[in-house]
Length: 353
Image 1 (cartoon, rainbow, N blue to C red):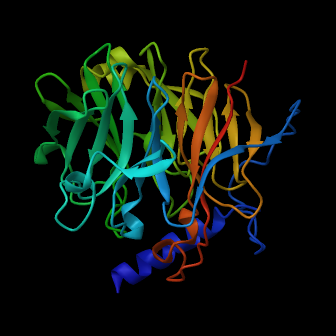
Image 2 (cartoon, helix red, strand yellow):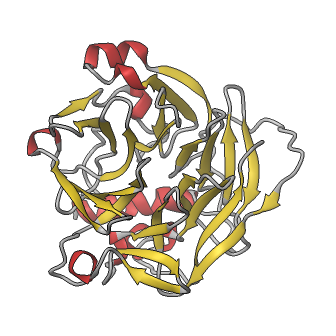
């Protein structure tokens, strides 16, 4: 019964976050600060670069050489967990069937994915509680990094993460609430990429908590390309925070350096470009936006009829890439009703100049 009640609560939260692109009219939530009038020179529709009825991208990564990889959200029980898109005109299970396909595959439940400066692909397997690091040039395993049981909670939800190559760390935004019934206990899980040592940091800090009752906690996280600042926020929060990347050495140092950065939308994805522009997905209004210290600006709308812009990725070709996966229409998050209808998309829009 508790799980049923929690599902109903989460369904309500996700219903509030349905895009206006939905045909259903959804009453605007009334607990947030009234919107400010923001003047934007141009609001365009994103460009669709991939569309599929079968492959439903959750998060994505683009290597320096331009190769595009996506994970399939475990919520939809995919047969294959990871794909490389449009390789020589085909979409290929990646890195191979042994890792990515079937009940006995090495990957168990992968959402988080990123590429480092050497074009190694980092895959965060929440099911196996480990990172798999794969060399996309030599097409071979680099290493695996286990996530110690001591730094996870029973309801941990190990989805979004960043790679800090300057300080030899990966930082996971553990939202918790993964069992659909526990109260949020969000935290950063910080892992040394050289020796595997791990720490759970800043647990349940106010900056990580949702701003609406029943909402989701810490989720989107990003780091600037210079590895100087880590940006983050709760999914159901309209405030963005940041901390110096160098401060993730100790709880004391981290807690003393967290600061409010600015305004954002309810968001599931976040990225930062080389100029310090912070991009977020707006899961309520169905768009990609720009967060600044004083306001939130709309940059581009997702296609009509689509919902839930999810993961974001800054590529070196001058574009911001994203996934659109209708997550709010899945049965688990929609009062038990499966209302998602393909196609599911990878989109892109130009970076702010």
